[in-house]
Image (cartoon, rainbow, N blue to C red; front, side, top):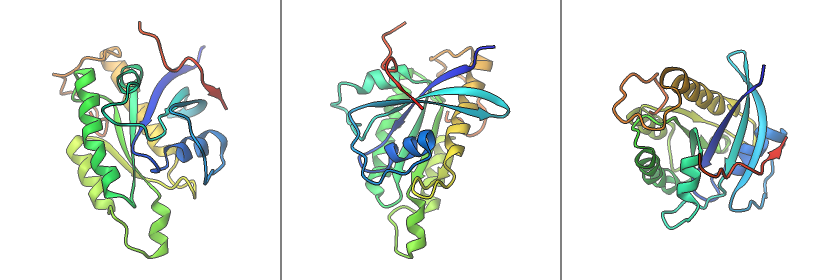
Length: 207
C-alpha cells in the first residue's frame, strides 16, 4: 500500500529558526549557522497515529513579504502551513497576521490547515526577559482556532508535535471534504486545525 504523501510549508520571518526546525526533524542535527536558499525542500517520513506519512517540507528561508514573487506559488502548492516565530521577537509574531490573512484569502478558506509555532523556547532557561510570552502565542492561536506549540530546535524539544498535528489537520480535511481548497463556508472543522499547476516541490532533498 503506497504511503500517504503531504506537502507542507514553513512560513515566518528571517532568523526565527525555520531551517533549524526542518533540519532537526529531518536529520536529527542542529545547525547554528545554516545558510538557506530562497526555498529548500526536504522529504522525511513520520508515523502519525499509527499511519506512516511522507512529508515534503518546504523551508522558505525568511523571504515572506508581499513583494515576493514566490509567495503565491508557495501558498497554492501547500496542503498545510506551520507559521513560525521566535519568542525573542514580537515583530516576528506580528508579521504572521498578514501571512495568515494571505493564506486564507488565496485559498478562499477560513479554516485552511495552519499550526502556530513559537521557536527558541530554550532561551527561557537563561532567565532573561523574552519578547513573546507563552500566553501571547496561545491567545493568538486560540483566536485563529489553531493549534499552538512552543518548541526548541536547539534542544529538540516538542519538535515533532507541530508537524504531527498539522498532518492530523490535513487528514481531517481530506477525509471530510475530499481535499478541496475552497471551504470558506465550512464550520465543521476539528479543533486546532485553523482553520493541476506546476509544483515547487518537484526537487526535494530526501532524508
